[in-house]
Image 1: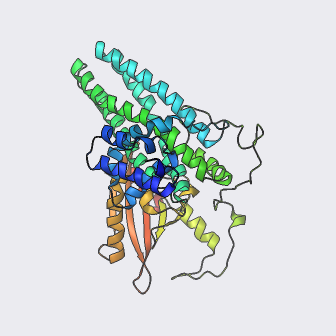
Image 2: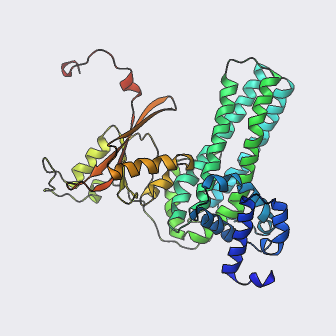
Image 3: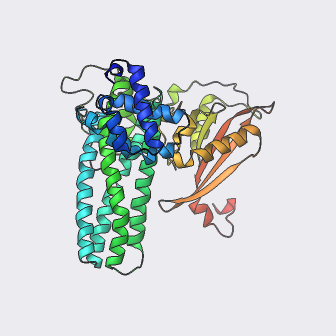
Amino acid sequence: MSEFINNQSLRKEKLKEALRQIHEGRPYEEVKVVFAEILSQATAGEIAEIEQALIAEGLPVEDIQYLCDVHVAMFRDSLDQQAPPEMIPGHPIYTFRAENELANLALENAKASLADYKKNPTSETRISLTDSIKKIKEFDRHYERKENLLFPYLERYGFSGPSTVMWGIHDDIRKAWKQILTNLGSERPDSRELAAEIEKIFSPMATAIHEMFYKEDRILFPNSLERLTDNDWLALHAQEDEFGFSYVTRGNEWPSGNGQKPVKEVTIEKTTDEERIPVMSDFPLTHGDLSISQIDMMLKSLPVDITFMDENDTVCYYSETPERVFKRTPAIIGRKVQNCHPPASVDKVVEIVNDFRAGKRDVAEFWIEMGGKFIHIRYFPMHDAKGNYRGTLEVSQDVTGIRKLEGEKRLLDA
């Protein structure tokens, strides 16, 4: 098989064939023996590109996600030879890796708390275990920054398959810690039976989190460093505060310290400064005339979150209201709407947009409870005067207070 090592396209085809055989059910130990030489030479970039190619060829994302750990196991010998990226404090990759280190400690503490609870299931050990799971749940900020900042920048370079797979794993982890906290918060009495049920959820969750540390270090981060430019990292850095950090305070040596090579200053444009918005006194609308400045202020003053996707399913706009229901940053602009949702809900999103495009429905609405709030989410199709589909408007609103209204309150009572 040595003739394939020096031919990149043939190498990739052989690596793809190895993964295909895994997906067809052949034991990976056998596949690893047959393809041993080429597997030992695989790079993080090739692994990511091959998974993405398989998705593009029609292999369901769920199948890739299910066998993701098997893929990593096949390539682990090769990946272990590649040093993980070391960056300067403050760089997004450095921050991600620091969070992983502390998340690992949080996991170990939770394991110890669970062992204590199994041994002695009391209200005291139950509280300790609950606190440790809540600590792990804080790691969600790490996943949110990956999904809403790092992934969008990677997608601009055609790198989306592995990102989609990881998002699906994130959601599985989220479901697990939510279920554990639900069980611990129930009125069930403390018992070894309850402890065993929790352990049954905790163990695969802990394994998934540990495996994700490895996948980030050996696959995601090297690919990100290879593709993103200095100015991409600066733009990403400028938006991180919107989502926050897990367990760490971001360092301040990057981008300006310790001999870091100069990079172009990047300003994330947010149309919040009146001076940056051109004032046009005659901007005709269906009824009345408004300046662009007035339209911008109006959209930002509405008590709803608005996001607009054009006829090509590309996100073009979001309103920056004082208290958004769902976090948004400039990284979302230009992103395909299908990539803005977890893999489990993408099919539903595509169905809704296709129905809008075909004129089969004029609204889609949902409501959820989130963080003690009742959120109403609606999607509306937009058509021009000729009936051509021109995009979809997403409108989200916290209606917690509205649902509690009773009686009347007239203008004179204000």
